[in-house]
Image 1 (cartoon, rainbow, N blue to C red):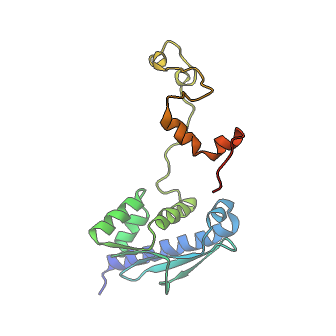
Image 2 (image 1 turned 180 degrees about the horizontal axis):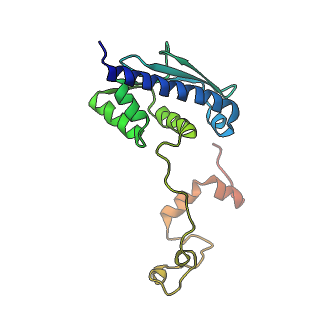
Image 3 (image 1 turned 90 degrees about the horizontal axis):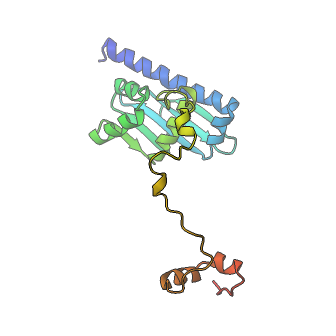
Length: 195
C-alpha cells in the first residue's frame, strides 16, 4: 500500500513525464534546433518501478517525435528508476546525468542501451527546460587580455624557426614517412604506386 507521500511522488513524476513528452512533441513541430537533432529513428523510455513510465518515438524521416504513456515493447534506450522520488530528483537536477550514472553504479538505476543516447536525450530536454545550463552569458574579456602586451612574460620564450623548403637528407625516417604520403607526392608531380 502506498502512503500519501509516495502517491504524491508518483503523480508528480507522471506530470513531469507528461509535460516533457508533450513538450518534445510540440518542439519537434515548431523548433528547428530540435528537428535538426532528430537524425535517427529510435524509441526512448523513462520509467520508475512504482508505476510511472513514458516513451518517446523519434522518426528520423519526418524529424518528428511522438510520445505515449506506459512502457514500450522494445525500447532502443531505457532508464528505469527504483522509485518516483529518485526519478524526480535525478531528472530535475542540474547534474542529472552524473546522478543517473551514480545510481547505475549503486544498482538503483538501470540503463538499457547505448549510454550516449542519454546525453543526446538530455540535450533535447534542455531545449525545453534549461536545467543545468552553461552558466551566465559570456562577456568580453578585460582589455588587458584582448590586446597584446610585448612587455608581458612569455613572449621571449617563443622560438621562431626559419621556413624550410625541403627535408634535410639526413632525416631518413622523415623521408620514408613522406614517401607514404600520396597528397604530397602527387602535388609535386612524383610517380605514385597503385593502391
